[in-house]
Image 1 (cartoon, rainbow, N blue to C red):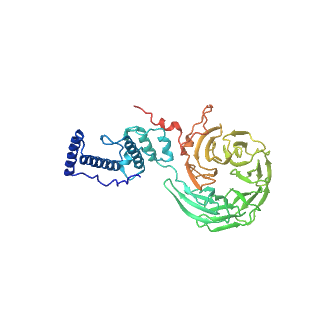
Image 2: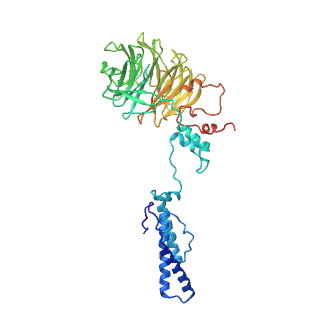
Image 3: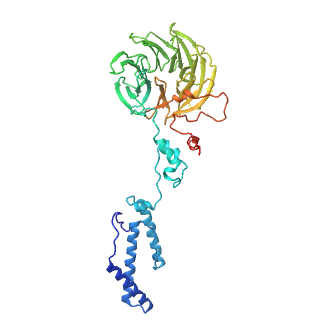
Length: 483
């Protein structure tokens, strides 16, 4: 049985002078008796002295948590020595587990404390005990990383899940469509995000939400087959199309101040005017889900991604103008580049295809990126696209010439949706699970220089400045400086 430990704060007993004198006398008498025949009374005194000394040693071991015997020799038998060693080992283990004692902690190894994600990689590989305190370059670098100035809003946590995002065209507001049918409007800054409005609009999950061109209204579509328009501040309904489609409405595209298009899961595309109760016309692109739509500022033609085809609809003539050959994999997203002369289409295969605008019969270029499906894409400049992938990463790609730039950011799950702020400096993204909306400052992309020479090193997995993950060589490159 392990002896009961005394509290660390309890003082050690201090023997008085009389006891010390008695012990000295006993010791002298013990020495005399050992030289003589060995009287029984003196043996009892010797036994009493040894017992008293052992008790003092045990008390000192319990209070100090020390394995040493203070330089005293043990004259007991081998069996007694083994027993003492066993008790010392158990006391050592008990001292390691007793976190209430400062002395016990001093005699145990330091327990590593986990660092935040952005600091863990900086401190990796650094042995304990190295460095000179404040003079250690590694310590200073970690402290600087902690004090790094924030250049983007903090993440927003949404318990109801996120299905769609839309930035306000003028103000620092972002609308979030949820799986419960609500639209949340947040104000954002580099320091904080604040919930401004909560609009309960649909009975089922929202599939897409968009601000109107002037930012005064919100237009949303839902799995409940409805489309509605509401005031962005009050949430008051201004227009409702209860059974807009015969199947769940999947996507919206805003054309101008009054008109917008919608696409459903059965391949139908409809043109709407907010001043009218019924749709202007309806066409069926294919017998599959309409995943994306896009048009030029002239709004003459609408490009529609539906299954494995790209379909061009003439909005003025209200008919299908041209349709691409059917690809083996589905198109998932669309974007316009090079002053609206090029259409980029992402696919479930991970390949991105470039079409000349108005010539959708066959693609003119294709880029093979990650083997993961492309879930969404966003034009950030005339030649750079940010794409969301099934592996949870946001990647930046320069298109003309084609060159992967690296990773903009990352999620733990598949990227569900993307949008870019009205000033073009922030990208917001949301994952299919987890309910987190993250912001990424992409202002640095304007300064990226592209080399026409092909490099051996792959850049598709290079972490860009907005990413929360550091490249292995970035940290140590900052340590090398002039002596």
